[in-house]
Length: 219
Image (cartoon, rainbow, N blue to C red; front, side, top):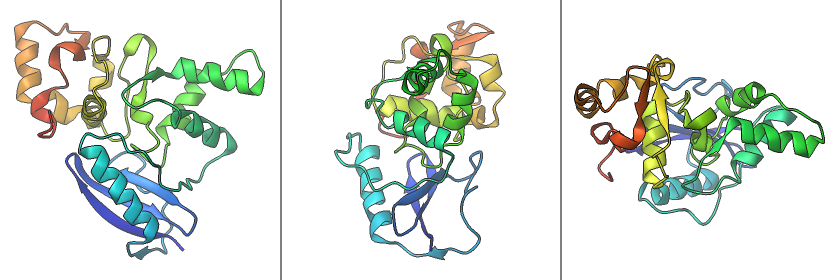
């Protein structure tokens, strides 16, 4: 049986799901692929695993690096499971590219090449946001590509971890993502755009310091 409960984060409501083995889902309300693996039959009840997950999130959103990981039990193919295990190895506050993950996958499988696009699909379908840190994955040359929860949340999570944002950028294609609306309509973003710090084709996150008007009070 799967059990669910909600968690109120500074970035919006989060739905948590777990079975008897571990956490099966962590989704921001309204994100892409929201609750896509949640069975129709589930019980709204907080279990020990869900309570542990809430404690992890409390620590994380307080700006601490949690020293434990709740038991995880996401559903997915062998390929996706392998990618998610690599994501769990990304250190707190650091980023890695899709290409670097693809290279790791190729080395593990002892093949010459692995598609970064295939890796991107597995990253994008991560069922357990934040804890399996898909927000730490960036595109080539530091491009902040789409995040299921929205580009604004991706930036906020990286800033919370004090990640080095100087070489990260948002291109116009990323800004077409519906999740970026909070970002592009924020007063800070518009002020930076008017000031000329942002070029039309590339919006440097390093100047914005994560669009503080679009992020919670820890900034």
